[in-house]
Length: 366
Ligand SMILES: Cc1cc2nc3c(=O)[nH]c(=O)nc-3n(C[C@H](O)[C@H](O)[C@H](O)COP(=O)(O)OP(=O)(O)OC[C@H]3O[C@@H](n4cnc5c(N)ncnc54)[C@H](O)[C@@H]3O)c2cc1C
Image 1 (tube, helix red, strand yellow):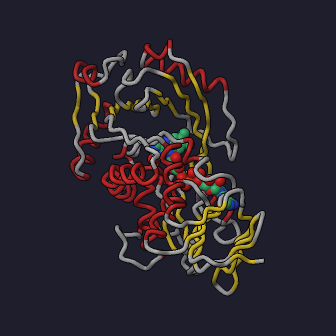
Image 2 (image 1 turned 90 degrees about the vertical axis):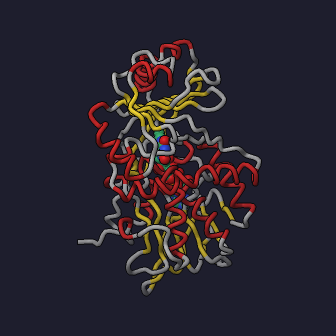
Image 3 (image 1 turned 90 degrees about the horizontal axis):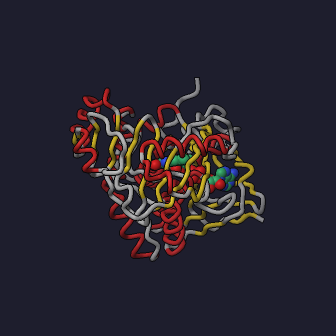
């Protein structure tokens, strides 16, 4: 039996699928979301929730434009999710310190271009900002308006919000085949039933290439593992996010403090390693000696949907007009997710796009 009472069928219940479902359902469309396991449990659960690309000036404008939209939208989103669902995603504006002394000029140019506040702090100013840091650099980049959000809570509040607006979330349903005929997708087969819709969206994160292997064999998204550890500290003990040599610390409102992360290209392997746990803990404790007495309460890994230059694909398939893709957000899917989902919704509904969609189109095959 084919289930077909839906306008748009979304495959994948991470932040990208959920946010796109939110925008589409708010426009009055009937949306069904198929999720292999439970929604918001993969990369979107595992991430740190820093609401900025890491070293944003290293990214092309196409990434920063999505980030900029998200930067402005997140306070409103977090507030409305809290009011609507009574689950607080804990938007927390701690600011972000970045130790990158050789990149101060690029950081200042970026801040001016995208309208961000920036300071360059000397050692004593950095210590004022973050008194428990052992050894501040002589010059640290300070982005006071960067916030973080608590991924698991953001996920749960989004699930509740889209369910309240009528989205049919179907968990434990893995799409095994996307069927096309005469230039259109006609149905998707799953481990349970077959579903059909007017339009289809693939938002399956790191698994998107697997799902699209017969339709877009060269789709350039692949898994990149990241391991994180979580300390239990006192609220306010660590005050600011700090990024240094590609590692970062993220304080949460209740005192939990995340430290991460690794970048490991090891396929779909989500195993954690005790050696990595020790390495991460030792760097964190070197930065912040107070963490030597803080228990590590969790250690996990997630699979980022890696893509060339971290530029996501947010596009209609060039030939199969009822197929859309929103995937490949790599290290920045939370901050890029809001604009990506809004843009995707614009494209599906043939509305004026919030930003120029050209940089996110599917690369033509050679
Ligand atoms: C350690 C780590 C730290 C990070 N830190 C940050 C950060 O600080 N800031 C930031 O912005 N981003 C961060 N990220 C990146 C961010 O988490 C991701 O870019 C984002 O979550 C991707 O969302 P997604 O919805 O595309 O993928 P996912 O969250 O992985 O969701 C994809 C979903 O699709 C489902 N699925 C897959 N195949 C199928 C199928 N065949 N049928 C049905 N369902 C399917 C999966 O089960 C999954 O639920 C981090 C990621 C990691 C791992």
